[in-house]
Length: 216
Ligand code: HEM
Image (cartoon, rainbow, N blue to C red; front, side):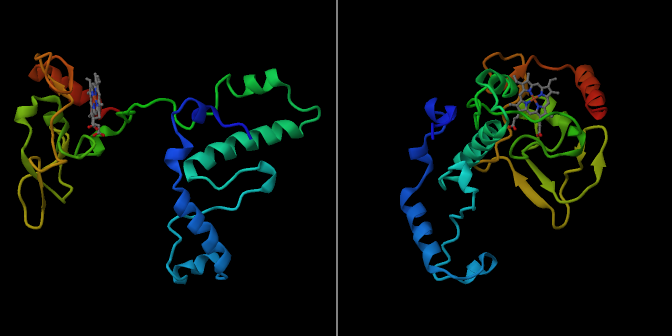
């Protein structure tokens, strides 16, 4: 079976993805165990952390790591269908139907930002939930709350976020802890600032953006 384009372009290398030793262990274990799949938790050694799925033999797919196998399943299923047509789908027609694009598991190394639809409803913000309100996110990073409290649902429609003052049994989010940084994604006139996304916003611009984001 020819490798998919993603292997060739080195985006995902099989040798890096597959732990051969573990995959062999999982395979031999399957030979020993006679339990029904749902009872495998009781197997000696409980080695089912490296699970495999049964695939139709006509697809000619080996049990690789899941992501790679999934790419192969898609590619080979589509090709199998093309082969079954009478007459078999031509090379040109296949390319056209495939959108003239290779079957890549992953296009490029990039962080894809989520859409801002409904963003008002999903505080706290940034990938680590380190900024409690949109108002703070649009303002200078130095002015963002250094510590805030999570755990209740009292919403602040002016700042767009939950009220975050201290309360009994609230979870304290401390932005000075490792992994909790609230910097980046900043509107500032300092062109060298880390994570700058644009010039500083005036209070009026900030308010206008907040009103707009409420409509999404
Ligand atoms: C007025 C313009 C912008 C607004 C209102 C805005 C708003 C936001 C909001 C609300 C988030 C948080 C998303 C979440 O927590 O789910 C966010 C994240 C993000 N935005 Fe923007 N953004 C703007 C411009 C930009 C620009 C110009 C860039 C890139 C140059 C950018 C790159 C990002 C990135 C990379 C994240 C994710 C950061 C992380 O998760 O840590 N944004 N944006």
